[in-house]
Length: 149
Image (cartoon, rainbow, N blue to C red; front, side):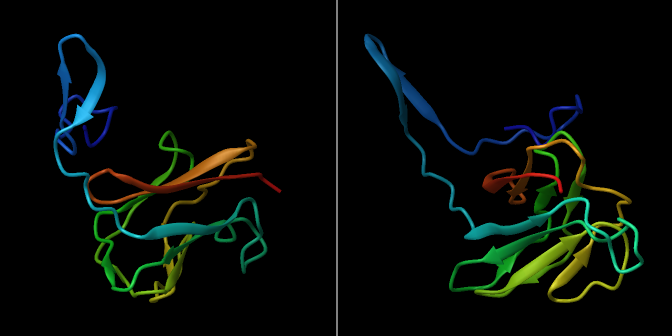
């Protein structure tokens, strides 16, 4: 796995190993499947007016920790356009068990339940599109498509 396909000096890591046997089609997993954090995308809102009447912070995606323990989301990436567009990388942030966090474009005061990307626009007018959440090792945890309004 590479950390970014657009950079020649991107870091490389192994997340799974497979083996093939001569004469037998297919591959067999020979390493442990990486543990995946229980994160789900529960809501996406594109092209929505923000609290200032513009689209500066009205667009958002909401994530939920569906597990029984808190998750350190430092380094997790939320891609608002399926990995090809605007990506937000979490700084130090912990999402409690059963809790949700809303990631909004624009700027504002970050709280335990709302994080701002600092990006002026994150969701585009193309429909449908895709929002993806990946952990700090690049393993995709969930993805959801959305329709712009």
